[in-house]
Length: 312
Image (cartoon, rainbow, N blue to C red; front, side, top):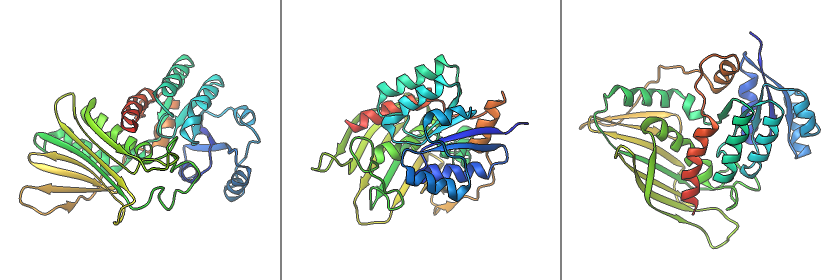
């Protein structure tokens, strides 16, 4: 079967991670990269011996199967519309867009072009999340009585993710960068949910992103939800996504660890035995008409609405 080709727009820290993952996948190939920051583009081109485009027109001229958009959120809609015009399938970094209005334009453009779409939500393809999903679906946790997301950051931006926009109120912050991953998983696990109250705290400097956010709500089936995020605090980074059942409580800790608690027993880390297909395999399968698990732009737009609500 022919390899699935990718063009990369945006070669920042996450973009470079994408490049490494694609290079390690035997079903995929990178045929072109582009970044408006010429120094960074040359650095990545030389480091990985990849073909670099001098413009977006040059990139689309290589006719990739998929285009990855790894640029700041306010550029996603324009790039997605351009990629749709050129007949490409599109993988977008999260959040889907700068706001719901821009996200709706992305959904419309890709629908009109009959393009495949996907969001970069890597948690969907992780052994920890797949194991948690299996447990929830099996009913072995008992009745689900609460879902919590707790995200605590000593630094924002995080030390590994320093760039001009990630800490800005206009485009950055952990509500945009971290919450979408978990909201998408919550949606897959429990369906639609809504917030009944929330508070988002901003610093005095109007250029800087939020420093705190909390919200309460519930799923359409009545399961309570609690969201809590805080940055600039005196502890190590700690992220916990907890699903409380009457028989078991399961926790995704710091992205990849799955912990299990049972009545009157100490928590124990779960040995992960499943090996889900990767996002890249899913893109390859979808490209070849094989059923695949992708998070579409339509689903990304659902998540975008919750993000926009918490930012207000």
